[in-house]
Length: 194
Image (cartoon, rainbow, N blue to C red; front, side, top):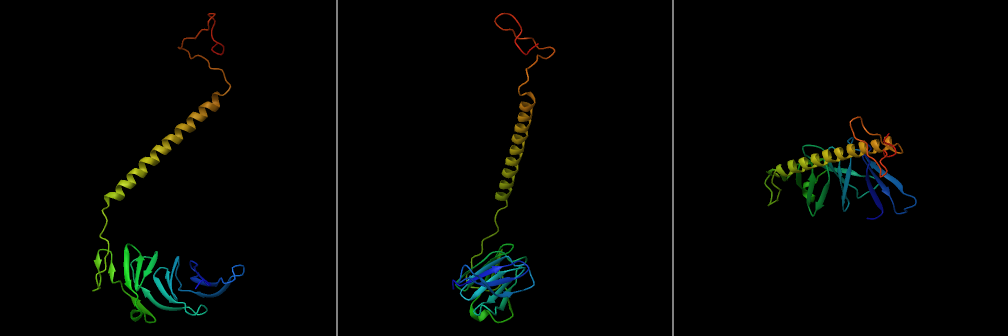
């Protein structure tokens, strides 16, 4: 409901805050998995907390959150979203988990129904994007490097130009040793070239 805020608090876990009185928020409880937590996705009375692993937490009682399950993935859990009974988790690719009530028993560890590169377990037609072609990423890297080189070159050129302008501001220009003097209409050398 709109009365609670679920806040990922890095190594402090997740804070559940009563925000029904916006001017006076109250900390109701803290869920501490002992891991770095960075993101929260809420679906009904369930929170999907992205830590080193993804924690599925029942928050039906805001003062007593309880772990329902964790999800196995290869790295640190990233962003997640829940659509119906399916959890989509970003973690070194897209991982898909079945989160129907019958799969969520206290303390259970869920394995993905689909993972990058194909199906992990038999699951009804779950689409997983194929590996992307790395040539697009290489093109982006080359373009970024070229833009950086041009930016640095332009910056250096502008710096040198402004330095030269600052050094010659208000000073007369003198002819160099082998440079001919310019003369004005009367035949005399131009002012500042002597």
